[in-house]
Image (cartoon, rainbow, N blue to C red; front, side, top):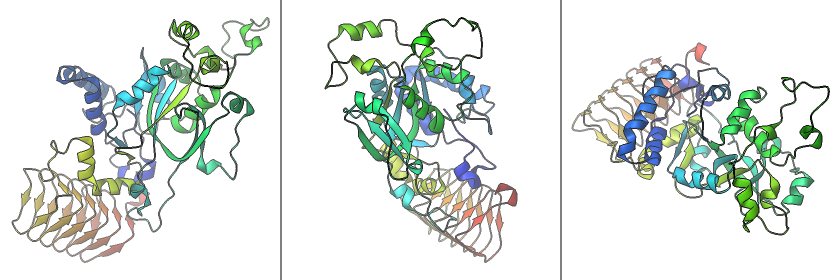
Length: 430
């Protein structure tokens, strides 16, 4: 499980860089098996937590500021590796990705999805304009499974260039736009071994994935197979060759040679055209799939929290109003809200489409709508908060009006203050 410092949400994560990984842990437990397997899974979670010096349930094996691929170079494993970003929310069954990966003995299998536009079209709190969503072009084979080409939309001017050798092998290529890499990868062990030796690859999405897609069509040169007279066999200065790392199961190639099955049509070439490196993508068309890696998507996900709970099947585990909440009789909390434990709500309070964190204190006659209030926030009497995010340990004084703002951790807003489309954080946090 991987998490970054949150460069796209630095105003929220600068003082509390903890990943929202509970959902991923719950999904992994469901994937691995039933209750009999859960004690062993919990032991592994505790072991990983101890190794990363973080409490259980807050997995972050990579240290803040560390290059993303460096943590994988320290991994010691004997099987394929599953990588899940902690900002991914999805109801997909991991079996679907694993089945595609095993069917084609893929080197890499990744999850792609046309993300819901409603989570990215809204303007983020504190911003006066919306940011463009990062999207990519993906080229697929005739079955729509194998990835033959990938390029970011930001790097494309007017035309897309594809090598003739690729088109010769795959004359029918379907190029799709509007798909987003969900940062869920299933990769072979040799890919991590190759990454451990190749220091030039620093990031998974922007460097490792395009590199693997390009190298699918690399063939071993004759001179690489012959020993070099003037080169030591133990020299470390030899050029990195990915084909020396790629490996298959012992009898996989022989089984394909004896089988009549083929992955393509139109020629008499061998299965997969003899490519040892193969990258595949699983496209999730239905269900729920989104990433809360931006402030706008994070804010909208909190507004849709009950729908997300319904899709992921955890609405029964997390009540919308915790039993320990102390709420006055004349206050109203909508059914589409979520109020965590220990929160105190005063008289004549109205809360709609919002999430309230733990141990918050909300005074009398406060109105909150389309907002996210994190833990230990104090909101005094008569405040009006619309479409905003209030970070931990902040204090909102009497009769403040806050609209479409992002309030950083530990802020104190003045009495009767009016704030609109502002980012209120410490200077050191910016």
